[in-house]
Structure formats: C-alpha cells, structure tokens
Length: 502
Image 1: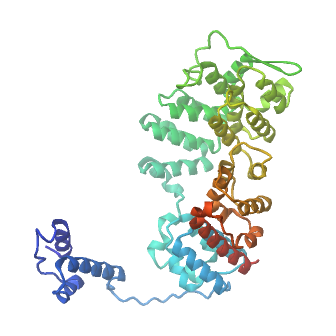
Image 2 (image 1 turned 90 degrees about the vertical axis):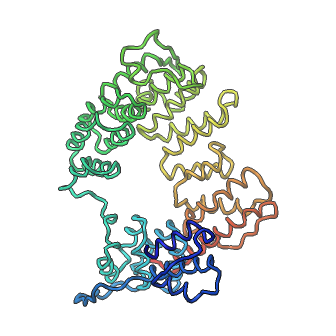
Image 3 (image 1 turned 60 degrees about the horizontal axis):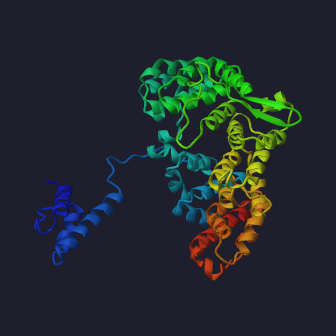
C-alpha cells in the first residue's frame, strides 16, 4: 500500500479503527517520525499538510535543459509602482472587472506589466482577461507565454480551425459544436445550414433550440426552409426560436401570414380609434404559428394579440395607420385590450428598436391604475422595454427615475440594467443621492444595493467625489461592509486613472 493510500485509509476509517499507520516514506513519513509524541490525529493532519506543501513546491527535473533563446528586450516602459501595487491587490482579490479596466488603461497609456506579475497574469483562468492583458505583457511576457504549455493552452484560441471544423461539428461537445456552427455562419452560412439540416432529426430538443438560434448570424431568406422545421418542431422552445427568426424575415410565409391576420384583427378609424375584432376561426396554420392555447392565467384574446403583434415590426403600424407611436398607444389605452396590445408592441421591439415606441409604452404603463395593470407586471414590462433601449437612452431614463421625474421601472431595477460605464451626470446624481440618505426606505435599499455595480460603473470624472469619506446614519449602518468595499474599489480605480493618463 503506498503512502497516499495509507493516509487516506487512516483518515477514512478513523484513528480508533485503524490505530497503526504502518511504514511510510517521503516527507509525510519524516513528519510522522519527527512527531511521535504528538497524538496520532494531529500527526495525520500535519503529515497530510506537509505532503501537500511539498507537492505544490514542484517536482524534480527529468533533465536539465539549457535554452539558447532568450526573451527580447522590452520596448514599452513598465507601469508606475503605484499601479503595480494596485494590480497586485486586484490579482489577489480576482476583481475581474477592475482588472480588465486596468489592462485597458495600461494599453492606452502604452505601459507594460512589471515582470514579477507576469506569471500570475499569464495564469489567469478567464480568457477575456488574458486577451485584455496581451497588449501589456511586453516582449518578455509574450516570450514567457510560449515557455509554459498551460499559458498557451487552447483556451487562448477558441476559434475552430477551419480545416477541422466539420470534424468538431460531428464529434465535439455541444458547446464545441455550437462554436463551430457560429463560426461557420460567419464565413459560409450555407455550409452551416447544411450541417444543421443533416443532423436535425438526431439532435436533442435543447440542442435544436440553441443551434437554431445560431442562424441569427447572417440570417437570410435561404434559411426559411430550416426555420420551418423549427416552427413545426414538437418542442416549444424550438418553435419559439423559429418564430422569432422567421419574424425577422418579413418576406417569409410565416411573417406574411401573421401580418395578414393582424390587419384583419386591428382596424384604424381616423382620427385616432383602434378597434379589435377576432375572426370566428383561424386558418389551418394558426396553431403552429403560435395562436394556440394560452398559458395558465392568460386570456385567449390576450394571448392571441401578443402573439400577433410580437411578430410584426412596429413601423408597419405607423405607416399602415399613418399614426405616431404616441397616437397608437393612446388609442390602444381606450380599448378593452390595452395591456395585451401594448405588451405585444413591447415584444416587437426585438425586431427593431424605437425610442418613440419605448417612451410611449413606458408612459402608458406609468399612468395605468393597479386594477388595470398590477405593479409587478408593470415592472416586468418596463424592464423588457428598458433592455431594448440603446445604452445612452437607458442611462438617461435611469437618471430621470433617480431624480424622481419618472417612476417606471423601479430605481433598483433601472440601475441594474444600466450599462457601465455610467454617464457623468448619472454618476454624480447617484453619489449625491447616496449622501442624502438618512433612514431605511425603498430608495435607500435601491441606492445602497447598487454599491457593487457603481464601484465599477462610475466614470473617471466621478471618482474624486466617490472616494470622499461617507458615513452612513445609524439606521443604515448594516450596509457599512458594502460601503467599505465600494470605497476601496473606487480608490484603486482613481489611482489607475491618475497614474495612467495617455
């Protein structure tokens, strides 16, 4: 029995059932013999710890190799000492977001990492970080990366070799196959389509849905026949993907059918009246197109309206009815189907973002009484629209919510979906609001709950104010640990921006 088995046996059985360890060699044997007066339980733990340290320290070289090549001289100046200290702290804490920002600032300032940090940076597991670090490794770092197989592993080159792509598609894991399919779609959409069509019947439902979604890259009318397989699929998730992609092809048979039905259901009477009338019976393809039984808790007509409208670009209604988004939403509000109509239009934002439609929808939901639209559904709808807005417009609405000139969605949800970096006006307003807190409230929870995100989302213009000491009033001091982490992060970021000016 070897040493590993002996230690494992004793730890598994317990010293009372196996009081004798037996002969052992190696560093653990030395520990056991040197500590004979120590109780066996403690000797076991110390021996196991000694062996772990010895193994982590390395192993004997099989042979001594003398290398003829050496690292070329670095051409970029090394980063300042304060930056090196910040990088060391970030690497120890594995603060991914700030590390990525630090590498970007180093690259912009044309500085490189200090030599002592190269092994730790090269050993980072997150591929995105390793890619961000590459421009600041310097010549020595790039040379060093080729000396250790673990530092030049396949994770650094996830793209599939075109010559090997078909084999990966045939034999790879689901993730590898998906990567090969996405890559093929960007270079040869027809080949990717042929791959998926050939294996369609053998794929599991979850894989059919994920693979079909890859057709979003380079989507064209030539994909319609494959998408039709998805539309008729037995799995609901696959059908959903197919319908969305077919709706993005306005000349597809599916899109034309949905538009024809919707025009029959919705009629416009000038100056601003919208009427909804459902047919007695749908055509044969209606159920496969999504006009099926509604989910629990959803009315039939509500389900049908949402299904119809989510498949039709919003510009269709503006041109067809010669009306603005505000007029159309206002007319919908005067019908018995206001929520279903506006939710269907909100879903259609996926087919083409429109700020005018987003503002009209959000304004209507804000005005709705709770008996018409309950608060949680209003939040869900508002977030679905916010997520479709461009980052600048999303941030602008969040600022208005912070300043209390808008109320939907709630402040915590708006902050959560606002992309980093925040604009300076939003950052300054958030900091000012934070300093004005005095007691627990929904607003206080929203502002303090955003501390972690704000620590990396605040723009450089806000960092001097952010590092100023902030003492929370006693009712809010349970947030002190989060506040301390926030101030530590913004302090590190401030140093980076001060030291790494281009």
